[in-house]
Image 1 (cartoon, rainbow, N blue to C red):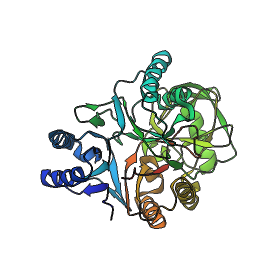
Image 2 (tube, rainbow, N blue to C red):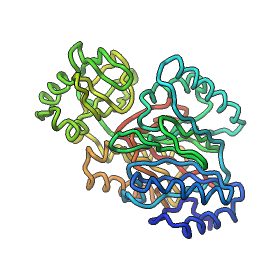
Image 3 (cartoon, rainbow, N blue to C red):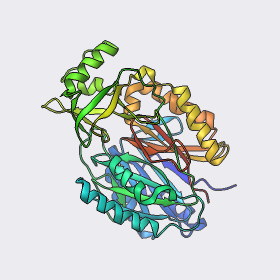
Image 4 (cartoon, rainbow, N blue to C red):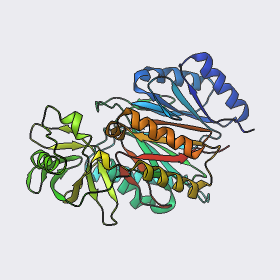
Length: 386
C-alpha cells in the first residue's frame, strides 16, 4: 500500500511534525514539503522552518483564512503535503505594480521557468499569490505571453480574510508578502476551476478603472450604479454601512468573448464612491451582477469532477488538493458551503481532500487553457504521486 502524501496535524507539535517528516524522508530521500496554515496559527511558520531545516528538507507554503479537510473547514492545525521529490520552486516578493516593471519582472521569471522545463509531457506551473497583489490577472497574462501552453496553470491566493496586508508566503528561510510562490510540478496535468454562476442578461460597462479599482460604471460613480443595479435586480438596499456584509452576495461578472464569466467580488468601498475588487477589472469591461442563489452547486461539482476524471482518471482512492473561495463560503453561508465541500469529497471518493480557503483562484476550464483568475470558485487538482 502506497503511503499517504498528505497529513493533517490538528495540533502543531514538534513530536508530530518530526515523526511525519522522519517517516516520509525514510521513503523519499529527495522529498520536500508544502505546508498550508490557517491565519490563526501563522506564528507556527518558524516552527516548521526549524524542523525542515534541521532535516535539510525543502519547505514552501502559505497562510490562509482556514483549511479544508475532506468535508470540514478548520481554523487550527496544519496540512503537511509531501512532494516525493522536491520540484523547482521560487519565492518572489515585492512584485511591481506598474505595467512596464511588471512586464519586465514576468519576463525574468518566465526565463527562469523555461530553463526548468524538460521533455516531460505535462507540466503545471502552480502559483500561490499574496491576495493583496493588485495586478494578478495582468501578471498571469504576461506569463502566458512568455510561456503559452508549455505549462498548465493552477493556483490560489493566500492571506487574511480581512484583506489586511500580512506576510503569507514562505520557504525554509523567509516569510514574504506582496509576492508569489511558484512551483513547477511534473508530471502533472493541471487543475479544474468552476464557480457555477449563470449571468443575468442586463449588462453595464466599467468605463473608468485602475487595476482592481472601479471608479466609474457607465460614466457615473461606480457605487451609485452598483446600488441601483442591486436594488433593481435583487430588491436589496446596499449602503456604506452594510457594504461589507452584503456586497459579497452580489459580485460582478466580467463577460468574456467566449461567454465565460469571470467573477470579481467587491470587498471595499472607497470614500470617492469607487469599488475595490479582488482581481483587476479591465477598462470598458462588460459587467453584470451575479446573485448568490444563482450559484449552481450541482453543476459546479459535475464540471469539477468530470474535469478531474478527464485529466487524471477516476479520482476514487486518490489524494486531491482543493481550494475553496472565501467569498463563495460567505455567499452560500457556512452550512451550505460545508455541504458542498462534503459532497465533493463523497462524489470523488477520494482517499483525502486537502486544501485551504482561498482569496482568489487560478485554473483553466480546458487542458492547455489560458490561465483564468477568478473569485468564488473551487479549484481542484491531483496531488503529485510517488
